[in-house]
Amino acid sequence: MWSGSILFIGGVIIMTEEPTIFGKIKDKLIGKKQEWAEQGRGLTGETAAPEQRLPPGQHLVKDWPVLDLGIQPEVRKTSYTLTLDGAVAHPIVLTWAELMALPQSEQVSDMHCVTTWSRYDNKWQGISAEVILALVQPKPECRHVIFHSYDDYTTNVRLEQFAQPDVMLAHSWNGAPISREHGGPLRGMIPKFYLWKSAKWLKRMEFVTEDHPGFWETRGYNNNADPWTEERYS
Image 1 (cartoon, helix red, strand yellow):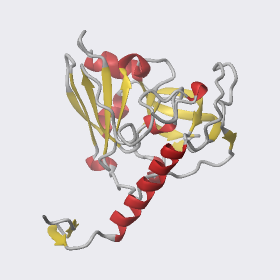
Image 2 (cartoon, one colour; image 1 turned 135 degrees about the vertical axis):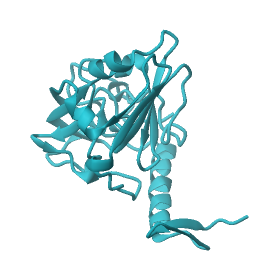
Image 3 (cartoon, one colour; image 1 turned 30 degrees about the horizontal axis):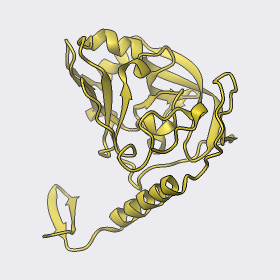
């Protein structure tokens, strides 16, 4: 069985016999994070109420660390589309201009990464979950939302986790467009859960009746991901 890689160069498909350097980097990064899950890295065995602002095992940072799978897709706004489909009354595909024409919101929230860093008081601008839900109108049998990214990443949340006042599809951070390395032009932001639930480079939101654990959820990470109960790993 062929086990090489596929490259797209100038519109031409090239099949290589060996994995590319990008594939090797991706595999190394995935392997390291799976090791963390197996070792229980960062676990303290403590729990806390959300009123304790810093979840157990976390430390504060002032910068915004970059974490990805070794691939940062370049997604141009001129050709950008976001698909909203599945168990909804009104499936739709939105262009960037159509997204920007929707009601816009601002939120200030903290973010918490499973790699143990937290950053306070992030100012987000984007489209609230409330606007998205009103637009597509999930059917009564809908229970979950699956996020699909332009780098083929996926992650899952329950519908009620998405339908919170502080959840949004964010296009700006601290007054500037979200950079490519942090998931621009559009990423999810679900601040009450570990950051892997806030998918970067958002391509599609699939509303479903049954849960479908995503990329990290099938690689040793917790399906729920509550920082205050240290739901880091499965």
